[in-house]
Length: 256
Image (tube, rainbow, N blue to C red; front, side):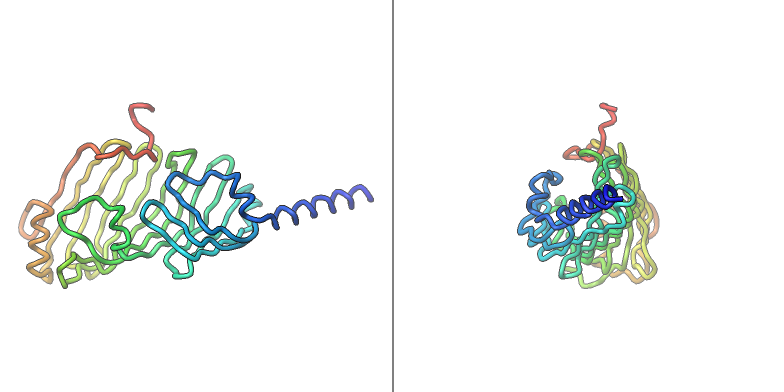
């Protein structure tokens, strides 16, 4: 009986010391994903704050994190991370068998904040980007699984007063390929239906657009710049080619 009590005391003491470790000591042992910058990390292993979280030119400030003990039953380590502004909320997790992942993630940002990450375009989109990521998994440096939906809310074109409506893209795949299926939502003045397929080196885009009666002339003119006509008030974009830079998150087909 005494031995059992002693073992229980030692285990409880170790758990107490582990949970109350300063997070900085633990962070020194962890290599963050490439391009991710974390500054002003304060608190304990169980909960604390992050002053700045950045990826390339996109950054968030004043974030809170807390450990979710229920994940330990699945032999995973999970943290809920949220920013004070309400733009970001996600659950980051680590599993020895499945690598690093994100689920139950929500992101809401004006497109102006994302322009440093966008390629050069003939017209500049405006509006709000919302991301609902049900599951994102990284194994090593590769993207192994994605299940998410991105929404373009109050979509517009810079310099044009008319809003085009709301649109969505269902994103799935991982490994060697990503697939994005595009569609318009009720009330949109532009009909959208199509798919984008991405590999590590190539892309394939097939999209049909419809200019509906409520679409104004300036927006129609912008649409003419983006896609050739395929019929009355209809346009189609069908392109394949090589990406300007390889997507290193996907496995190269040539390398297996």
